[in-house]
Length: 213
Image 1: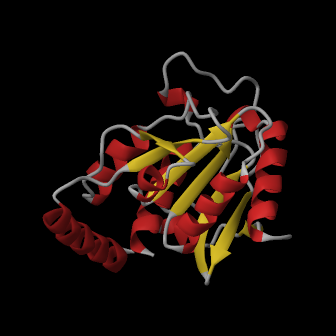
Image 2 (image 1 turned 180 degrees about the horizontal axis):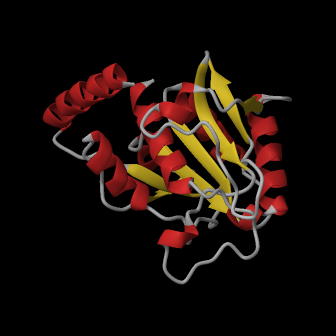
């Protein structure tokens, strides 16, 4: 754990010196005009404070259909509450993005079954059958910054995660329960969904993992 964080600080310090900019995190606009309006970006300041990584203070609106916008962010967030269909152009760019080192965090707002079903369909159309695999709680992602051996849900039980692996690297983390962290957003609620309690920590861990792996 300590060695990993030391390595991360070195990598990020060098990267900041070379690039002269903060890490940018994209809030995806997908399926035309769908995007998140209730995903807390507090994890960005948490990562900066706890891991020493310079991040933008807010997520950046990022069109999945725009390659320049998409590839400008090493980490993107995709969330929603309704069904959707990704056009072929967006699926092609998503495949290129994930196969070239990008990381996608997908979250079903309010534990929406409609979003989850559409996301699974989109991933199957893009990467093939059974592309989403269960992610065990002992995966490295759950200990990159905050050690999380258990991931409780708001209404009881433990969260279950799925993901996409590209050449052995976890390139996408998907939560059907929801990682919106609505406790730290204004004017938003979980609408009765069984949201992940430690959503901020999971998203922070995911960002650190995406930058290190």
